[in-house]
Amino acid sequence: MLFASLAAQASPLSAQQIKDLQSLVSQLNPIQQAWVSGYLAAAAQLSGQTAAPLQQSSESAVLTILYGSQTGNAKAVANKIKAAAEQQGIAVKLTDIGSYKTTQLVKEKYLLIVTSTYGEGEPPESAVAFHKFLFSKKAPKLDGLQFAVLGLGDTSYEFFCKTAIDFDEQLAALGGKRLHARADLDVDYAAQAASWTETAVQAFAPELKQAAGSAQVIAWPGATATAAHDSAYTKETPYLAELSVNQKITGRDSTKDVRHIEISLADSGITYQPGDALGVYFLNDDKAVEAILAATGLDGATEVQLAGQSYGLKTALTEHLELTQSYPSFVEKYAEATANSELLELVKDKAALRQYLDSRQTLDVILQNPAPLTAQQLVDALRKQQPRLYSIASSQAEVGDEVHLTLGVVRYDAFGDTHLGGASGFLAERLEEGAQLKVFVEHNDNFRLPDHETPVIMIGPGTGIAPFRAFLQERDQAGATGQNWLFFGNPHFTQDFLYQVELQDYLKRGVLSKLDVAFSRDQAQKVYVQDKLRLKAEEIWTWLQQGAYLYICGDGNKMAKDVHQALLDIAQQQAGLNAEEAEQYFDDLRQAKRYQKDVY
Image (cartoon, rainbow, N blue to C red):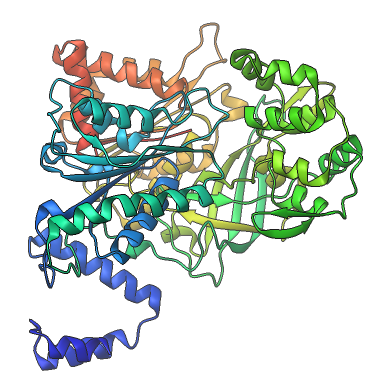
């Protein structure tokens, strides 16, 4: 038993302390035990009293694993690599790349990076500072480094896995030795990631074991503590929750359809924090599935194989495969399976193919190119459905066993028909209140509130307001004294002022210190949140100088970039910084966790 083992060793605990500890642990369930473990590890690190490993290897015999994660996938893969390496007796330091001290890089001997890529080839928010450092004049020579890089991406984007490619090539350019070849994995990455993990660990193991000599490494301090987030429900094992509320919160004449969604988590034991996201699995539209079966001439009862499991084709199409988001690899596979000469010619021109897919869902490609093929060929051409992540719009301190979302419904007309997004159409149109859906929490430690006394500036136009509603609920319930300033924008005041009554109540009660709104279409000249920022430049700069935390949530392709530019302009105007110095100022804020983004 654990405590017998502790007693037998040179434990720093007295016999009575061991007895007391055993008594406490016996009263806790596994999740509570994990939380206490994570709490104690973090507390020890903060106090500088982290216990040494029982038999500590030299620093040169440690594998450092960094992960840069936008949606949690890279983090999950990095944890699996850590477990596989430790099974081989390798000491591992696992760290979020956003928390990694770049001055440590020159000292590393063995490094493995797992990273996603965001948007148009950009690093995930947590990896921005590391990426800039690696390509800066400050980057050191890395002649003593042996490394490997694993990329997670989405082939529907033009710059597939670009961040992983950047890291891989630049580490080599700085003198590092590539110990294992990089892999660039698409959204259905699980099997390939497991295979890469096995071969990568095999590549590192001899080097590390030789460096470690005969010392057996039992534990290593400083590894990322994630135990506090442990839950029985994950992406692989989601919780079957209940939809409680589906309420439209934009006006009748709005150009947007935004829903306030409430989901019951009763009896699940699931916990989340403001800043986290909710993963939602969905069912595809029955009409879309029937249309595909008709276009291909297939029987929905035909058995097919998917990830080693057997399903009826209709079930596979409804529950497990992607029919809405389009991506180039499907067109290529479908063209080959159906011998469609036009599509085969199209896939040769990547730019033309992406333009073709801009307005088409995967469903459209099939319906516009009907042809016979086998059920298994169709399944093999499609990729596995991925859950959609939504920023959580509630604090458990206020709503208890519920989770709230602010959902923008994807809806557009094309090819003579109305198109809906996969998950947003499911939640808004096809799932009845009281019906069940599969969900899980994706924790985001890179989007967190500071202490209760620190002021915060929140910039969240459109559905980007979601996490800031959670922030305000949390601070209200905690009686926080830190000031809160919100910038919100949307097209029209009368149609699109999301959570207007709540925000006005927060403003009246002083929970919300300042509220600036930008309704872009209510006047001849369009006004956006970045314009409001510039108008309040002096006060924003004052808040930042007083230690305020700065948050952005919403569209990452345009809004977040425009807001960032406005902030750079403010820094230059208010502090007399040049462009490079302004960028460095916000890089420093990012490193200090005072500039955080949740963009999509």
